[in-house]
Length: 168
Image 1 (cartoon, rainbow, N blue to C red):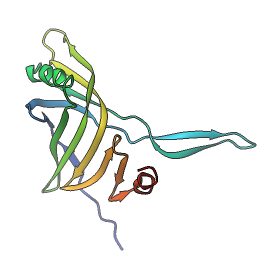
Image 2: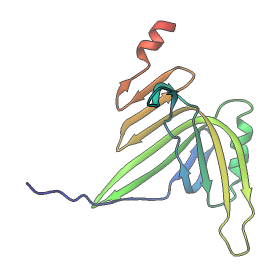
Image 3: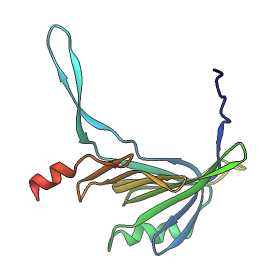
């Protein structure tokens, strides 16, 4: 039985959009939210770190390769409502394109307009505090997290369904 060698996935630039505002531009980098759980260290003859199934707060960082005036409108919008950001792209693997969609609802906690050195590329960075986050790969939702509604669906399993039933 032979080993199948897979082609590498190559990531393309992401288009960044905001609900009701349109395109913010093309990303230079996207730091998607980390799914991180609470931990507790138990002491004893041998210490152990236990992972507790409670999610830590999430954030996301978007770095655009331009100064985009729509960014300021998106930041101002959060005084009235919580904006939803979309990062759309695709990966190429062999002859196939695989669509990737990140949806993040949250408020901008940091807006940084970096002034580059002469002759260098412009950057505009937003750091977003996440209220809800989803990740779709190839049209299949792999992650759906909503802090306000206590939803944590990972690979189709709703891990907080029973907990919601106990407290509602």
